[in-house]
Length: 538
Image (cartoon, rainbow, N blue to C red; front, side, top):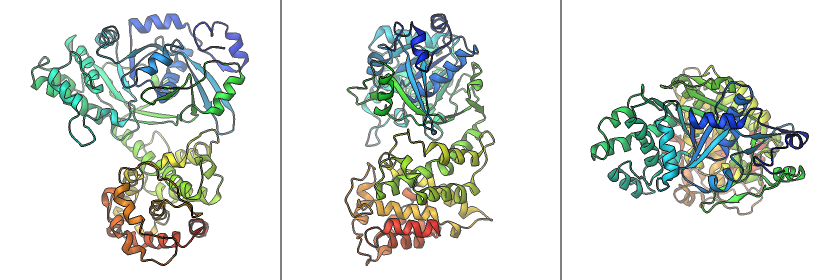
């Protein structure tokens, strides 16, 4: 069994092995897509293959769409060259369910794949042709939050961006420069409308995309290297919209246990490719069953009925509420708590932590008891049902090979949003009091204990990458596990860092409690477990 046109010719072999196959005339759909494209996506990685491509696949199967997707990759061309084209743009989605079962789906909704390379006249010329087409309605992105940044690590305009600003849209080098050049092609061919839709997992993602694209349009017009009016076109939401979205689906890197199951079916070509840019990609994607995509309904050139595929279209305010619900209370804070204590207690899988009754109760308390009272219900998703799914299906899923060590990355950048907004809501509430918070301060103390780099059994471990380790670790290193130290004096500077917590914890009235917890966490080997059990289970 080989995943390509020839290998899929005998459908019976695949179906007998339990694979769902495309149920439409792919060649007819391909021709219609090439002729009248409606959706091109930038970022050919796992989230796209497992989510957006599968939504379109389902709608094609149901006869609700007659065209498929075009995908383009602008960061790592090898994904297209060594994966998409090798498999005739098919991919295999393996849905890993919490009950231990799996679904295997051959996804064939991608009809064309291209590299975003301005030096490749054929590929870039085809992309320009797509952007000139009247039928194009949506240009979407999963290029990670850093993909929208025009600055280097020192905060200065990156060299490639600066060069692109000066030279104009002919042959830009930077990612957003190339995207903006394609949008310029749409402008000069009649200022045709289109939606530019970031689907990356970051707050107000549409604004990040707009800021980057408009910066190019503005600079090009100012420098006289493009036609006048382009910046106004980009800035006109009736012509070019930049909707906000909220996306949520876990798609870890291809897992060996999944590869083994597929190999036992007789599937060949399963070895992962690690590209020269260190992208890890295979012919299959393993993903959780739960998925959410909420999009601001701002499409100046119209859109197909993607709501039939489970995508929620709503207004900007509602998207914002959904995003805050997920990031500030109902998912991300639970993940961070498990990451911090998972590292301290020696866990290697997040799912295994949910078998620990103390940790399970901890995240329940953070989500239901402390978070839920300040959630603004967005209406399109119920917050309690969302948490129910998180704690009962998503996090405990034994198939999801996510680790506390991975989720612990950049924790200093996450605390302000994942907990700080809840603390502020308590501070500003007439019905609630910060003094009621018991478990969020426990996580704060746990994080500082984590910064010591010593597990609860007294062994050293490597801290996950975090840009502020050099700032905070010198304080944590003064702590010991002897139980005799002035914790308050040692960690006061950390607790006052509002850039980390979103607030000064002294001004919030939480510092004393955090220090009390930390004093107990550092009272010898095994103190983390003892302290958690005492406060969580009492």
